[in-house]
Length: 233
Image 1 (cartoon, one colour):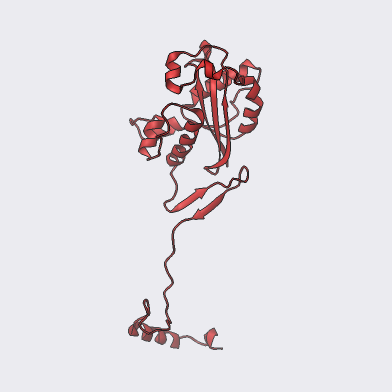
Image 2 (tube, rainbow, N blue to C red):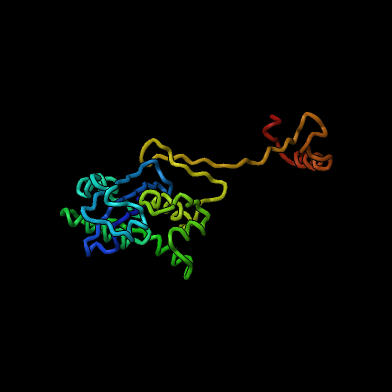
């Protein structure tokens, strides 16, 4: 099962007021495991960026001057999404902006994609508890120390970890990593060690794990009850 974890940064809160997408971060997951495939783009919004928005993500108009326009990356963005479900924290916000950008260039919106809103999942699972990305990272002990400011790809990477925890987490002792050989490829490795086999006929009578004399007699008595055992033929 392929899913895309997605996040954006914008110039403000309302695409209807002319605010634009300035960063897109997407991360591919297959069977809830991140692969090596990501899409990350900074975009020129063709407008000024308010100071209050800069305080959140640190992206200034000067820094983004000369970056691609959304129209320049739209094909690559849509191709990366494919028909996969989208995993988004507070999905109406990001989808509202992305659909506005797509409408601006005459492209279909993203209504055909199933959407998993992790904000909704978190509020259902932990009613009344803080449900921001930072709060969920803290709850699940996910290291978000690099998140000094919001960033689309970093937030998508953190959200992927949060999402896995929200849907049940990974089994203890099971290490899951996606192979870097292409989309959909993955390797599953079981961590941990099985119990050492018990030597029932050790070379030394007092070897560790050897059966007691009582156990040996009981075993011999059991064997006498068997009719034509195959090891005696």
